[in-house]
Length: 339
Image: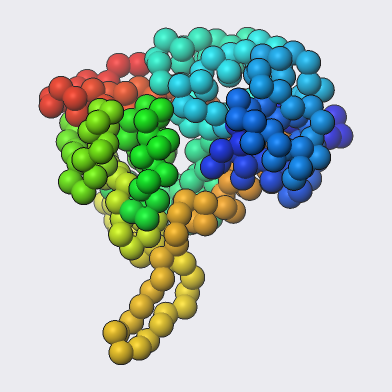
């Protein structure tokens, strides 16, 4: 295969990033089809990308569009069924996180992947492809901090986007599932172990509107891992200074801190107010290179007939952990995680 023809489902906040990379930045692929239930998004596909094959029905795109692979960037509850449809049709699949919000569906996806060993399956945990996180992983592998035993992961969206967040949060799977999944993936990735127990707390302090549809604006969780190590998660939606992502990995012989200050660049402003370090505005600015790198890896895996390091089973582990976290918060109790 000299060029991978790709169809994308969803052109929302993340989907449009993927579409632009596929259309103009990544070598060896062609954005050949777009699916969306939003007419404005389909018009964008025609106008910006010159796409002729546009669909409102996902199954129709899979059946009729001239594509080898699909990128799924739709609402979280749709991921699982759309993955199954694409794999069963013999397509390579890249899906945004999480791959499903149902464990039984995750198990079905595992079987679909196992039954299609010649197809590439990949989940969009883009932080693994960020230069800083990849560097930290290499240093841990090299033994730079001894044995890692604790990961503290913080991920908070900027408060200035709260009205947009309130809109999409109504159809999401909740704070822990929609936002915590990236940090839980990092905790399990760095500690090389699945979570076994979790206790979670959270609430609404600045924006009680989240409570109107059973969601929260900030949450924290403590994990015990299967190998005895620990993880701490802090996730939220109201960072007043900008998009705040910070991760610390603590080991027996040292520690690594990633983005302790979520600064926009290396410039500092000195004036009458002191020293000012500007912060990145949102996840797109912070992880744009990582979004490119993960999709490039997906296309390269197809062209080179190889599999990504990430597995479908890690996707199931993340889903199990986030669902258990949401349950622990709801029940106000320690929850054992089953796989």
